[in-house]
Image (cartoon, rainbow, N blue to C red):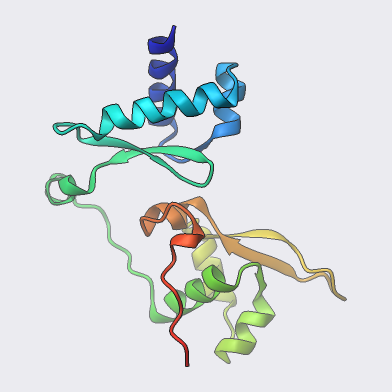
Length: 168
């Protein structure tokens, strides 16, 4: 039974290709959270063994199946992905959102001193930021935060892994 649950978890994580929350796995597999956590520790350990190209990473109370970093050169040679770099303006805006989320567009524009509507639309299109609510002030401006894709792309398990800001 335990091996069947592990196989089901592998299938779910592989099929999704993105973070799957522990709560969702509990619901899908119909097992208690403590049992899931125990099984995931075993599964992560099994994937940690040498000779495995994949790994399962815990990410924000969920799990993600991805390739091991030591195979990045081989993967880069096997597929030539389209590389669309972020502009300096996009990187600055993304950093502001990451460190100060939730934050409104007006707050970002005040800090940066320029309009950021297009930059934010680009970041949303790439799935790096998302609307996370509205600020409880007059006009109810939209609040923005980073996404799971942001964490995945930058190799972070949570926002706590962001490097500390330098003091001015």
